[in-house]
Amino acid sequence: MFLGVQYLRGLAALLVAYYHLFGYDIAEPLSALEGGAFGVDIFFVVSGFVMWVTTDRDDASPSAFLRRRIVRVVPLYWLFTALLVLVALAAPGLAPRIDLSWDQLVKSLLFIPHGAPAAPGDFNHPLLSQGWTLNYEIFFYGLFAASLLLRAPWRRLAVMAATFLALVAAGRWLSPAHPVLAVYTDPILLEFLLGMAIGGARRELGRLGAGAGVVLVAGGAGLVVDHGFFHPSSLDRLLAFGPGSALLVAGTVALEPWTARRGMRLLASLGDASYALYLSHSFTIKAAMVLLAKAAPVMLPLVGAWLYAGLAATAALLAAATVAVLVHRHLERPLTEAAKAAWAARFMAEGLQRWRETRRRLGEAPRSVAGDRLGWRARGDP
Image 1 (cartoon, rainbow, N blue to C red):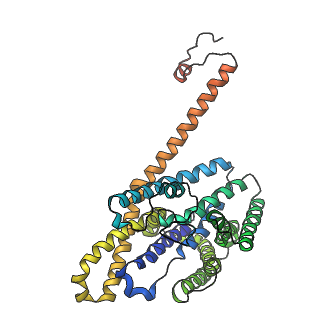
Image 2: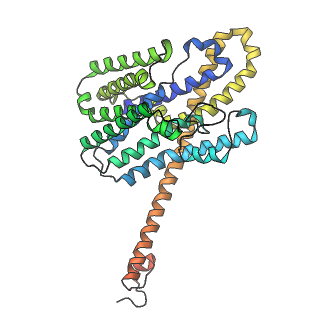
Image 3: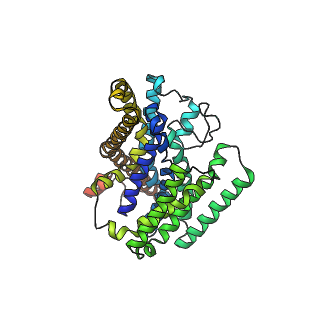
């Protein structure tokens, strides 16, 4: 595991949570500091890096790779989507922009890009709004799994690069209106490719030294912060945030020999809980902002709008991070382990069924597993 990349993943999730604070009136005095959406771009580069590194020396089949990713991503996403549906049914006022149609629900759960009546013009709007990024992730996983059929890593990278560049070029040429085609030809997909390239160059980056790593991190942070907070650009998202995010990840990898010697427990916990934070923060921030709005008439005359907004934002982010760590430890990990066990049991059952069918074809009577272990012979066995 690259500790620095894990820390960066946690910070990226926190940036996304910070960005979503500005959907609430309490945060309005801080509007000059609005930003942080580029946390998603960092996520995409990190995802490409992690997929490359974890399969570089792995002989896993495409199906085994997809199984691992499904077990990791799907259970918690489905759980929070179900929670959102329950909230929308029980208290519609808390989720006014939710379209509870079967079409929306099925497409959201199956990661099929689609629009929504509540968000006209948005071609990628699942019920759980932050799930839009997972539609890109799942598509990337599918293509990456197919590339695993090629054993030589450089061939995988070349094929993935050619595929992504062709898709993006087709999107630019055709400007597809259909949500699926629009997502699958979006230039933001190239951020996964940047992460894969960094993964391929990780050993060279590790030899650059701490000084070069600091320069890369500082340059990347400067780019994304400038475009994300102070000088919003009309450039495509890829051009605005892709290079800075790639430099951040590359610099973090270069600093890994230093980072590995200095463990930071809080950042490690945040990194471990980054997926839980990404999915759960909208619920936690909503609850925190409702409570803080009730306290506003008392607090505003005492501390002023700007300071109260800062205190509210800090409290909401701390609550989101705390809830995410609890969700990761007590919900995400047990869910993931249960999904792994269920999948393993399914394959064991299928294997046992194939074994029995094979014996039948050979003209032998099937025997129970317990019988085999005890050495019992079924009637008709030699």
